[in-house]
Image (tube, rainbow, N blue to C red; front, side):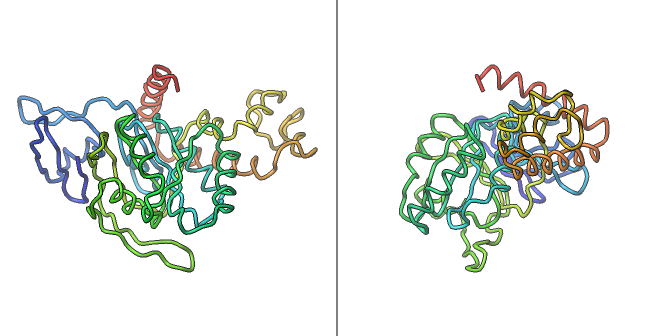
Length: 313
């Protein structure tokens, strides 16, 4: 499947492609790349249940954008020259866990930094988002490309998510061995790039598996559950288990173990601040969706968690 702004291209069994204009009825299905659909005898299209989805919060209705569906691996792309950025690392990790797929950090443009800089970035990722594997790559010299190719072939379908200019299209070209995707230069002052990918598309890789390429995004709005944040902020969650109240906000309640741990230096104050910021953002997004959409999303979350448990996540 490929999703453009005004057209959706479906691939049927047997590799027969069907291009459909985005009509109101088709738009109502909320199709995303990776979705599996069924054509009814009456010519209608039915979207089958999803096993996973990668989504972000948006400012316009329906306040959610599904970037990819039925994925096995979410590649969280960060460019090595940007260095450790704790808030970006934590945000990407939370979105990765929330997808229901296996998250994996993808360091790009590794050839542009020193070994010491890579070690610092890896250490930050391991400390801020424990339990998520890391693959260090360079599309220019080919390092890490085979490791990434093997990961995708092993798991099936992967999607890359990251801000504009992180090098997603260049890496896809390296995986394909061709210049299938256009690439653009990044600005030297901030290492950011333009949107060279303008659509979302599932691409079959020659070594096995598929990769969903997505346009770079300016903002990665939070659409996560509390449990997904706890997986990222496991250090805070462990301390919070000793709070007097189970619904403690770690702000003003008596007997708050988290506030006490921050006060005596046992817990990093920045970690608590980051978690609370993401929690507020996620609650704000949930409030905008309305009760009907929230009920739908809770049902998806329930099914997603069952899927994760079945896979041993």
